[in-house]
Image (tube, rainbow, N blue to C red; front, side, top):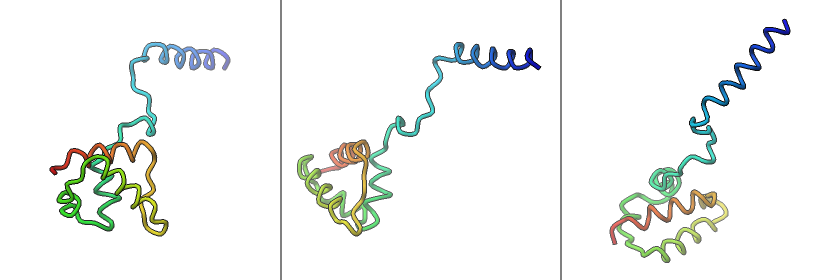
Length: 95
C-alpha cells in the first residue's frame, strides 16, 4: 500500500516537473474579448448598428460606458479587464 502511495506521489511530482510549459487553467487569466462583451452586455439595450454608428473617440467611449455602467437597475457590471477590453474594441469601430 505504501509503495503504491509513493508511486502515485512520485508520478504526480514528476508530471509537474515535466510539464512546466503547459498553460495554467485560470479563467481570470484568459484574454477578455471586447467584441463578445459588446454582444452580450451592450446589445441588451442597444443594437450593434447604433453602437457602430456612434463614431466616438476613445475618451467619449469611456464617458459613455461609464454612464451606462452607472445605471443601477440595468447597466452592465464589468470587471476592470472587461471594461478595458470593451473600450479597446469600441475604439476600433469606424468613426
